[in-house]
Image (cartoon, rainbow, N blue to C red):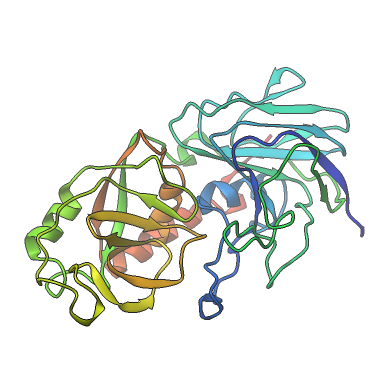
Length: 330
């Protein structure tokens, strides 16, 4: 079938609901763009899988869970992510991590996600049809591109989807659902700016043993952590600046933990592509989804150092959940 049809009309857009796809726009840092896409790539891709979409199809990212829409076309919807949003369809509870049927005229409502977790993802069978910009439908809020006019959704926005045959409904078995918490452990690899050239060995030991509070001013750009006074292995940044966290401008990695003065920050999918601060560690692919579920102002996180082999095996474990053979049919 061809041609998109109205799928959802937004009634309550929540705090900052955006259209995203995965993996967004990788490879465009030289043009000034971080990839965008979902902060929690796992819940996002699973939601798409549950409604019969390609795992990267355009779907919604809903911070804090609050969202309401009127269904405009028959289809299948899945919600994955933060707990406690208590989603209802026409007043009747619907489950997370499971596809469910919707029909034109239905009303879908999600309350504030009480947690654990912070972001909820909504996929609609056929995937949402918004224009591609630089090869992706993902909203990049800082650049104002992608999604619906490069912005968060507002009331009365109408999202269209490709009409498809009604897919088989699937459910993620309880044993395969990601474990959410208020106190998290996230895997990182050392560097590119770690010890001994930037941090001292004692600094690094503190970094991976401390419990870090997630700051209130956290978003898709960066996840801010509580301040900490590192010793540093040098007195200043030399030609780069007066503070030892200063470096000559260079490219930043997605998930990099860079230190701005005394404040560590995890770089998110809408983050800056380059800058002049030391990146002491980088969150591995298998740990990035956890960053997307850190609740600002409440949750804490500890970092665990892993090597490349361990990072790769963890990534393979995450991908296991995305094998349709491991899902239940409803």
